[in-house]
Length: 121
Image (cartoon, rainbow, N blue to C red; front, top):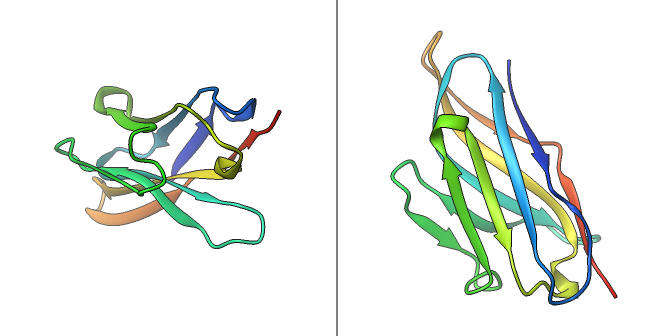
């Protein structure tokens, strides 16, 4: 099995920063794209940022200029550096990975369990 484990969420004041991490572990695999999504209370899950295997990035308009997505392929980990946080950033943040399982060459999409980010004074 392959699993993703997020960490780094918590309570932060407006204008503050948090760094989320998501590490993949389990069966031998090769990760393609990874991303971060979020879901606020009463709202649909939305894309925050993605990063491809070659390092190309994509951000939601709400995240541009404030958030930075990065990855460490050696550690099978994706990060989301969140700066200048706003109350509207409050949500459960989920990491996602598309990967190739090398035991049978099946493509899998895996989601983490989510980590709560609360931005409040």
